[in-house]
Image (cartoon, rainbow over all chains, first blue to last red; front, top):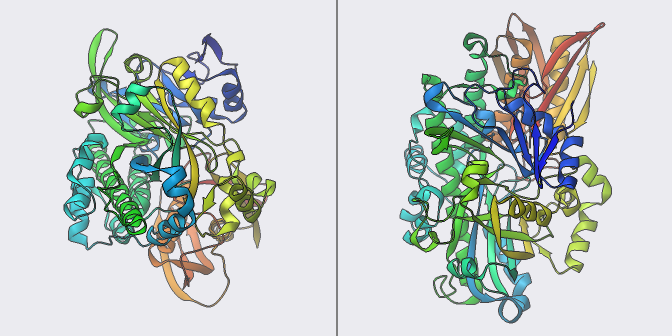
Length: 482
Length: 136
């Protein structure tokens, strides 16, 4: 494969022709070191593959946390012009539809109020937050209620008492993705999802108690009510089995249409269909519904956090100031409007392991964030810092208002387990002052910090390019692993 | 008889399975998937019939494995055995033996779904060889 050409401080271009059928160039936002990892990892090839999607505009993009995925690279962003034959590709959203992150802030000061009771806190969270394979949730549902979750998202959970009305304003799309069609979710997907509402899941999903240990943008931090030494709780989870099955079901149908549509894509996982096709409309309705399940899931998990803190500290969660900073997905496709070649276009923006990051003044932002831009929550890896970023105006032109989603893996799970046992890693983390809720230790080291790139390098690169700016750094003190 | 190997992937994981017949190949792939999840535990168990159809062998393997994953996830059960009766004419028929998990913890990795990425099912000399990646 031809080496990518560096065209700016953190910008690399893959010329059309690198992979047969490319319709636009590829563009990777990365430092030299991050780019080297992406090349070794086959992820760059995947950026070029995505550039073959019918109707793709401007470029196939990759954020600085790019790594090898399936079909799309993780960190991939592709926008297609839906009024000019542009497609939607379920692989550009992924199986964990609507997977994302939310951050709760608090009035609690770590050193004086939480540190002395950290073990109790992590144990309480560990008991109250359902997790692991299968994992029955806190709010299992009957079929009729499930359809309501799929239509209403986080609003459903709030109406059932799991949260506050004001939470919805701090969620992407006000907590309810439009266009959800529960009828396009199969009975078997519903069967998988119904028991799981309010469960963390497994793998890289987690809940973390963190401390704000650096503030870079004080105005934005003030708008988000963040301060030095403060305790926050970050939740990373998705749509659980309902999302996995929904993608499986619709991808199967779309895969079988490829020959009929005359598509010959370089990776079968890129299977796609014109946005205006009836099959695409079914997928979009189902994807939005599964995305609503993910929003509701994180809402119910946040309720478990509030309940745990209230019971431990003997004050209501309102009195503890456990307010939602923001909730945003990093696996979703959305219709958004951008200017392309001087004309406003309706685009289907796929973000596969990339986060939407609207700049200041965007109409969707709640008033308190209008001056600073959309909060973006970037989880680190277990044991390393996480970050809060804010969207920029430049990102609209650079990346269809997208930025990174995390540290990005750098090592396979098998290799990660060979470096250190789960028990040894647990001991190491606890020596560093990071407590873990009781778990299945054997699997812990698959998600070890050394298996990931540095989130700090990733967010600094995002700021260097102008995709987002760093607001605050949060260091972990307790982890509840999925 | 046949065998399977785990394939490394930065974010996900895959298997390469091989066997003398397509039926044995599908059985090996099922064992591979179950081993990754940590639920391959040979025993007696409840027999569940599987019958899937697809236009090509790769699609058929994805559908077969997706079906077993759905059964695992909804029944919270281990795989105690697998027997594939026939893989021909775009159809795979067989049975999975399942035993309910005693608790939700397994020894392996949660697999979310079966992908089409780098998927292949092909004849190499006198053996059938399959490559398939899973989203974890």
